[in-house]
Image (cartoon, rainbow, N blue to C red; front, side, top):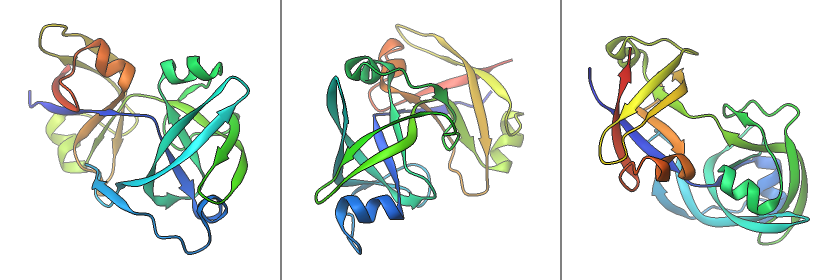
Length: 189
């Protein structure tokens, strides 16, 4: 079975154009920090602050803009903020928590959009065929190494626009010593 690249996704935010304008100013050009593995996506040098009654966290802004703003945290981040966001696949935001976001020039109250991202595997239709998986399927992926473990309930996401990688959060990566920013795993049948 071919190896799946595993990437650790730290806490971050995706902004809608409307929210980006309120937080950073209309026409603001976000400063690229680095490209991400998914084509066309990049981390910016820009950050926002998520504030709750219990504390605050700085979050990297990822681009391009999306149709709705979304905050992705690890469980340890949520614990620090004393909130309990649901585990959801990216974009499934109905009924999720909201919070106050502070940018360089403005503040907004996000009504919903705070989640712990469900671990997932991005791939193209060709790679889905190679790995024997289909869109929406839940798979298990086993890592190797000193603290090898198997991640269950990994959601397969298939699109012509996707690069091939599995995304987990920082807590999950630390638990399995997944190798810094990137490691590898294999699908368990």
